[in-house]
Length: 356
Image 1 (cartoon, rainbow, N blue to C red):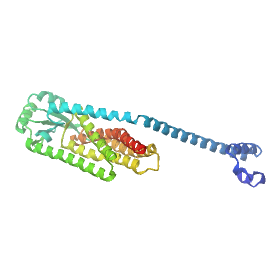
Image 2: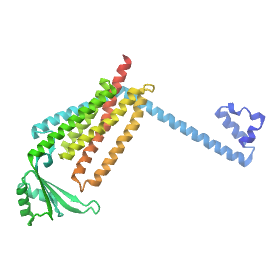
Image 3: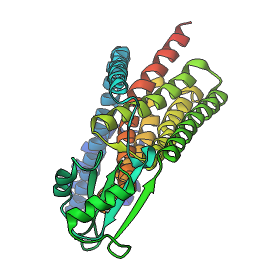
Image 4: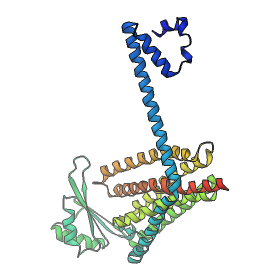
């Protein structure tokens, strides 16, 4: 249809017509051309409606961005009070926790020393814990399931008591001798566990210091670099507080999880700081929003993978369960501290620098 119209001299000026006038012209001329014109008119109207909807959606999205950006520009300093309050509350809690436990965490036998017994029988963990709590020191139990059949295959018993005492108490309770065929017994000395614990703590401190040095070398600016380090510290510290609140006894695997959390915590902070400081051609809120889309995708992908793995392994692996639990808590706080704590500090820094 449009080919035949374009061949006529009187329609040679259609290209310069506004969209509204072109729409009216097509409607008028299509009435005189039967079915072909009707189909062309229908296609044209449908295309115009789609373009209008796309423009309205784009305008609505841009309006939302602008309105949220204006809101954030007004309240970002107040938002910074939220992590400050949480950190201060966490410090108070950890101070009281340390006074009660003489340590910053609750440690299991891999870090304090003790006996671990795995009995290859489907015994109820809660029952045996209640029955032997007065005979064995700081006893803890856990049921172990088959990953495929989901049936209980064994029970894990941990206690700070000596291995000989633990074995005799369990044999008396169960009514049969514990052998290599029906059980396994492991004992860790307190001296070895204490030394291992100190080495792990030193490793975390050393890794955190090296991370901070690398961040300062990359950005070479005090406040943005400090914001990255503060956010990473807040992730680890808030995770530690929640772990203590949940009453989790941290093992050597848990310490390794905190070590892994340093790397998970700092990646999105570096992404954000790099976008804000290096891409100066775009508006500040647009730089932050661009970093947010990439960073939140990274973190949510990792978080969902960790949570899925946690549900898979929680019934048969104590070590992996603790690692994935700590990582899931830490990644949740990473979202909070990156996009509230770090963003607020960076925006404050950029605005102050612009005014000066």
